[in-house]
Image (cartoon, rainbow, N blue to C red; front, side, top):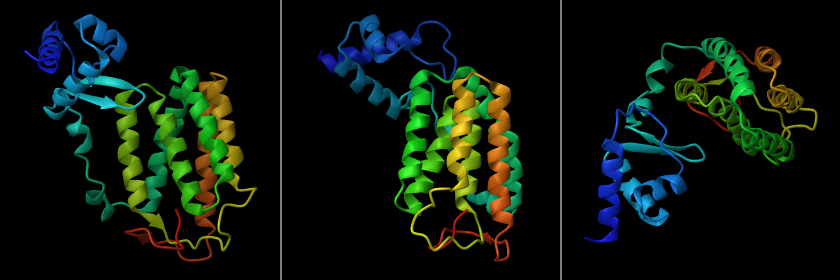
Length: 237
């Protein structure tokens, strides 16, 4: 029996023990490898096989979980585009994201907070709008993931998918990148500070303040607000 096959048998046996719930987090790789008596390299190969079979799924930086995540990926944002408006998206964001920020203030790890600070720094240093928007998306995603709650994080992913699929009909600034005084820079940093202070009330309030600021910027556009089904050059949400 080769080592890879032996590791797979050991891992299957471990997972069959007890009553494991769907999306239950498994021990870290180092600990799990020791528990089943294999090397980390052998364990990773076995996990890859079980992931293909839908018995486990992995989230980079978060760990390995029992079950198949495909059900969480079945959501199709395109199905909502004909029935929702940008205003619907903003209302949903103002309902969900302040709650996520509050939970992040209670659950975020020091590493989570360091990653938020890093993406805030990179936002300020962005040399293009596209680079800034990637940082902005990552900032909000980091907050959702730092709740340590798969359901809440998945709800954010669904909302974010719809948000990215529709944009407001607003012309972007002629500047090639966000100005140094772009409103989101300070707003993002205030949210992070509240999370770092472990103040859920302040984190929620700061996030809501940020989203209201985003909405005001969209509503004060000089062009009519409209729904654009796909991103186009010169348009930004």
